[in-house]
Length: 595
Ligand code: FES
Image 1 (tube, rainbow, N blue to C red):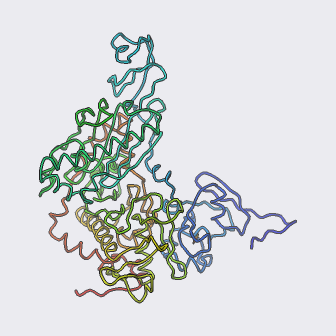
Image 2: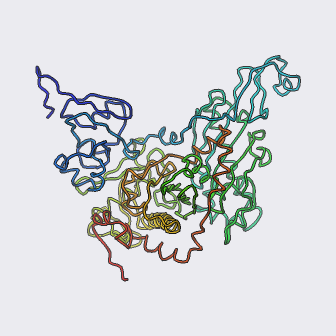
Image 3: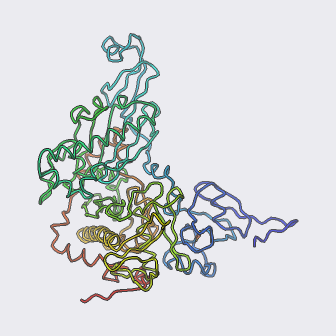
């Protein structure tokens, strides 16, 4: 019912969303308003009020009586108090301001790659000058022309080309599971392209420790791992360069960040000390080499460099996250988690940072999961229930191929709410019905099948998720205790995964602390953003040294009660329900543990 009739004065309300104002007829939903503003919000149930995915936030909390039956069922009371509503269930009577949380945005492949941002460059590191060339410069340019373009990296001449030539720089984030490269156009001073690929080292082990063990067995095996990584990176950059309409020989600088193991493998450093307590890196300071020094095919003449590291398992990627998020400048307790195979966690209080690495395992990136895959076309990335039946959405909206991490979290969260999964992570056979195939440890829940192909989540997959979420919870908990922090002012989630997962469900399963939703903020691929700043901005290159000086490290495995805490955190949301008073109310089947 719109309340609009021919001949009547049309009653309109203004909806302000992200700097745009749209007018809608009174009686229309905010979902329609958001769509008409050209913003894509996920709405898998089509606005029926059954999926709970179209979460938005109003600048002013609504009245209790405005809540629809669907919202009473799908929204947590606390979230409602913070102004959250479901867009399809909100029919504004007056002008409103609307905020759209990242998790409500429709995921597209472009969005996945867009998660790194470029901040305004303060002091450009890569510059050009078109001028008369000296004899030696003409030589470098391979031309007899008088005038040409001189390409500078800091104060140094990095290349000389005839006019019209193009050079790029590359910022690279090497994850244990996924690698993302960004092409920085020097003339335009902006990122023009991005490309991602799976880390080819995965064939030698999903987790870092397995790869280090493999490398430590013999020099040949170590070379195998280094070669696989470099070959993958050369290939990734070749594709990126092609997208930028240049060749790899036009890359003058490659700044990379990554965890310490990836950093060491890429540079050919010894990884032996990373494989045993106290897990020390071979080299912690900033490094610069030529591409030819590390046999980087096609990039032999590029300068390859990385910022300093913090510890054996807290690498240049966290340094880049700290740079991009300006965490050291936070006054109130602020944490940042870069979720990957190793979740790197930083907690800033009064200008100093404590950091640690929690072995989350590859589940969040789709690794070690029966039908796991990274967030790519065909990945189930959202799961919700309608009348007790699980529904899903895939990236690209096509046939399901597998699960990515956010889909698995949603699946488990919905399973807990419906009672299909109990708080200890076990399937409830009665509640799952005929979708549950196999028995006990081999049970699997069928989400999709076309007779030949299926996508299911197994008991073992849920266990993997438990390990990951417990590691993150425990790491953050220990650091907060060490710093005497009772409650966080903000929690920043770095990484493409953090940007695309449902924060509500991440909090619900006990991976993230139970703090108000608006205090948990996805910041995209902050490691990539930091790498982009490092490649393009001299001020970032200086700031990073100060960041490392202000950051201390905690080795979680040396914490005496780590194991006890970790085991308590395996339950959904946690064995100690007082840590998750709201979430635990919605877990249907709670398994009692002996004290
Ligand atoms: S689109 Fe609003 S609840 Fe599904």
